[in-house]
Image 1 (tube, helix red, strand yellow):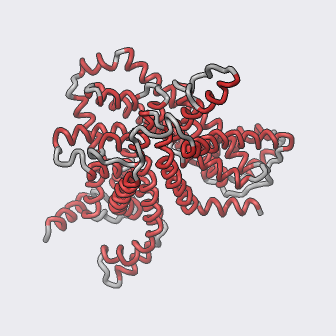
Image 2: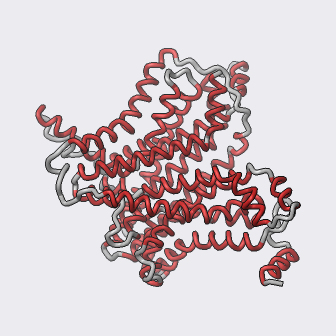
Image 3: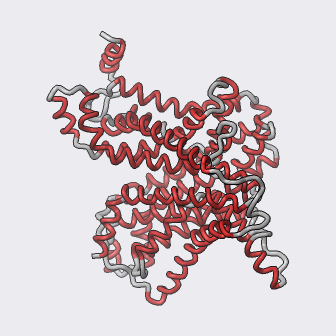
Length: 550
């Protein structure tokens, strides 16, 4: 009897890891999935160890400094403002495109979601180029005698740019909730003499609150973890301060700030979980919609609202990028920052490696969570999501600490960079794979077992071909997200290993806008492919919307 068999027998006798249906968890698969979860959690451990080396008294003294408190206030203020603004944009836009007779609703649905494909740091770069003190708008107004325009730098500039490029998270999740919502409930409220506003406030809003909360969580986590936009807008937040301290030998401060940033992240996740759980029953809708609300005199203002958001979030950044391609002169050419296509290959290379590695790691975790539901499998599944909630700058710092102290052979190398990407984006592969496994009829696997197939053979012959579309979709999402990751790439890339994002960052710091045009457009184009993945994954939502139009 092998050691694995003896361990499995011990587990069964002790009742450890029993699934909800009474079956014991396969020990080999459980150990493999648990090992993957531990690997994902390991970088966070290094931050705690590094912060512990500072000492309690020194840590309190550092975190109590006025500059540290300002960073905390700035970060929380930015997250709160961007999240609130995204809700104020995303929810009305979702209602307009689902519940009203807005003209060209499907067109607006697509274009209002597209700002999500523009990396926020490229959007910030474009807005500074257009509306900065020496930008295109200032140049255009100079002949008219306007010597200066209000600065776009600082809190308001960072909040504006981030809101424009992350509100689609709220827009998309709210639309999904509205499309799943049983509209006959509102019709019943209207027959009881409730006004449209009262029916919305008392019936619709509680039903779609979990969708709004889910989108708000994505916005808050993105805003808190974003490094590029606050840096370009010269606004001091956690990520920007961590990067500066780390590169100026203030590594104790960087570690403490990273720990504080993780604490704020945990608070945000806990708040969203509480809101989502309070409205969890609201998802049980039938998806039946009544007639769309006529806008009447509000039709033109609604169209202008959609057009204004689209112009600022999509037309302006794309116009600026194409302007960079055609203009010449200082800031647009030269500087020794000529773009080389090898940067694009490097981005593609590490993204493909990450997609492959994340897919291989996701399959055992997703299969265990979907087929053997238990406390153990749930904990393993949730553990893989910690990396996704960990800001890239914190993950990068943790792996730098590890590599420089204990793994000089792997730091800085491509494998360590790929590992960081996998830790960050593994949940994207786990989520799509788990959903696909849940759709596979377990009786098919049982039939293969009765024909003498081993569990491994049954998985390869039956399950894997059926879940292949979900696995491929998860790999595509990981690939596309990896292409855009900035802070982890800046901190962990090997010397001389330039990618699209590192080239864009270098020319941004030097102010040579034109040299960023080609890589930025390539990134936006590749990111746009993510919308195709979303359409494939959300095909059921599209079909439900088509039924409401009939």
